[in-house]
Image 1: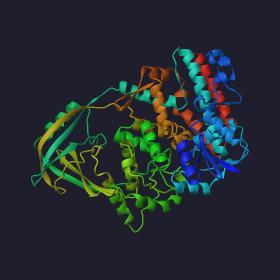
Image 2: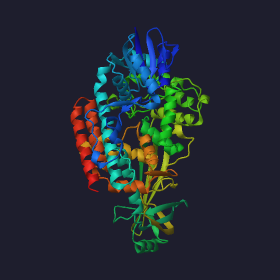
Image 3: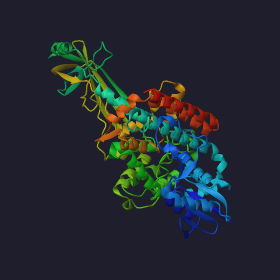
Image 4: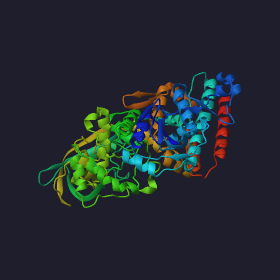
Length: 602
């Protein structure tokens, strides 16, 4: 009698087979004395197409809408039907008495397995392997701690509702609005509000009316003959450093020319910049877009290779930036495994400490969801075995991991107010005290421009000191429109879509999930591009005429993130066992009917 293990991909199946000592090869599987290891290739079964229910539905017509099958069935994906049939055969083999679900540990992985299980009409008992790393130790530990598959029934219900709701909304809305407009308009509950954010930003930029404003700078000479510069503050307007009145700026400049001034105040404040938190997938994608100009999709592909192929990082499709307490004992061995330059010296510094500094910014069980943050596994693969892209992404993950355990970056900001003819001028300077975690990134050129003249050199001054005004300039400038979205900033907007929502409950739902998931956001951006709604212009994402047209015609409920907020709140409650899936799906069907009715009115 044997147990069948089903992984999500062949590479993962081979990793599990190695731990379970399954060395004999079959056609599409590996086996040993007690186990058979096989795999999906992503999704093998998916929801039926409309024409699978009724051939007449292949033709798009308003008379057939809305399409809402009472019981949504499954169909095999043609490209991988051979593997699906193999799994069906293995699952129903008399020699197999139990199944281990070893697909990716998350909502989508659960759905992949359950669809295969139901398509095969299998009734055998299931255990669930839930792991965050593909090292031998992590797999062995996961096998020892498996739960019954029934423990994940609510997660499957949530995944099933998400898939069926996406199908119902996407299928019906796409057909309805395409028929109404005479142009193919693919739509979706995440895709459309994401596009709306891009279109809204486009209109903000297009309709932006720049205003002229003026800044006044003055050079002062201290008693020690050193020169420093200040910028005028408008005391009548909350000490802003600009005025929209040209005449006022010129009058002030004329008034203070060559006039004596006095150092009114000198204030020094210590600033502490905390180390970065560990990466979740979205933050890793943002980082790689900012630093490496990688599209989000490329970062995910490279991270997946580092996880599956090289075993160098933990599960990348995570939405958590924290570790759980059970990971603490593994941190020192991971640091000890970091023996390559230029990382070794930083790891050695941490290992030399009496105790590894672990804070709630790093370890917090309440903020770990399906998986903990992305960290190195301690794998020993030589860095020379990586491609240049893999090395670049791994470099970001290693440095982020090391930086998280370093102390804050500490510096002083000194603010000097110099007053001349009753007009205040501000000078700011920055003095480094302790680099802290920034030593990890000392090799990089700073990308963030210092603001408010923080990089200026401030001479030694005393409060009440008399100084001379030696030069005054008036600078004409223009207000700037919002910047177009890049992939990094769009990922942030998708993750933090709750800030576009007024309802507090929905804001909270979106706070924990946002638009899409870390694993799907990159694909959503690529889908917007492939659908002709968005184009890449250098690093920016710009909506096309087609994308702008779609957002102009769809009802508000389809383009606003509130809708996704309601869905995500419902899906979370289903996963937690607090909401019956039939109630959720009933609300989706009512929503679909509304969308079709709106399209008919056009």
